[in-house]
Image (cartoon, rainbow, N blue to C red; front, side, top):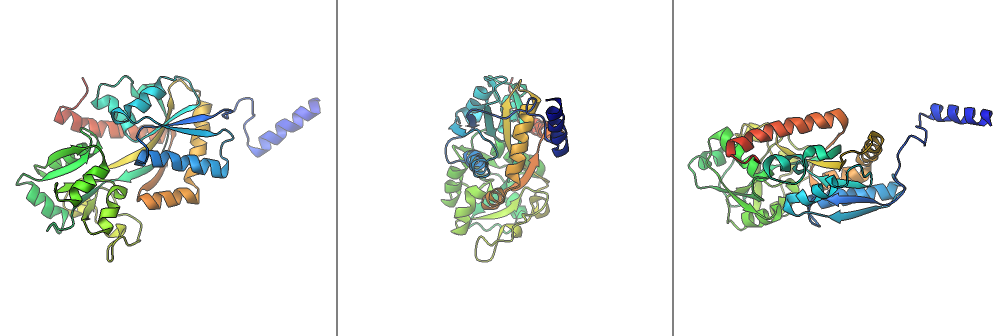
Length: 328
């Protein structure tokens, strides 16, 4: 018996595999809690991961997806935070997970959640109507300085309005912000010439771009999109200039796709799910999802993720303080 145990220990060490007694692996259904309604970007994010996990059998336990998108996604995070120490509840969101407590009175703190990973960044593009006579972002800014232009976006005091405030501050523009229920609604309003611009994510406006109803002026990114695929007859994602080079001095503004556990879970639980998500991010199906949605793949976990969150909170808090949007 002693010899068998010794051989087993040697084998485990040789393979670099943690002993089962100390490693976590779910043995009952895991709930993926989506901080958005069905069909939206966060919902697609979570369900894409669910499908990849199932295809490659990255977990033995099944995954059940539930949508809790009320109150700008706060419903999902309150629900998740309320299950302290529960290794079977995982929330899927964006930067709203850690920015909601900064800008709104919500019944949870970011410390009530445990960050697991960020897997992608959804970029922001300045879009105008297809008939508009702005040749560049600089032309748009020049007109915006005169006042009267309207940018539409999803919700109030959220990512789109925060970016609009940053544009005004960086350029001296006087753009008015009009909130809608979703980026999809903002896209329809721009196509119908009811607003002058929006700062939608690529996937939210690509259909109207293909139809010639809207067109991009610049992307709020440090480098151009990598994809050379043509979206219209003569223009593709890589043809869109960065906003900084096109006349708006903002280096980068993106929305991370994030995954969270309830606070109080053991670190081996965090590590298990972080490893699963890393494997997800390395599959061809994930690469296709990134390409189809024109996002940037950027897997972060541990100290890198914590540093990115801290930096984003500091940057956005400056805008919220300037606008008087900080939660009291």
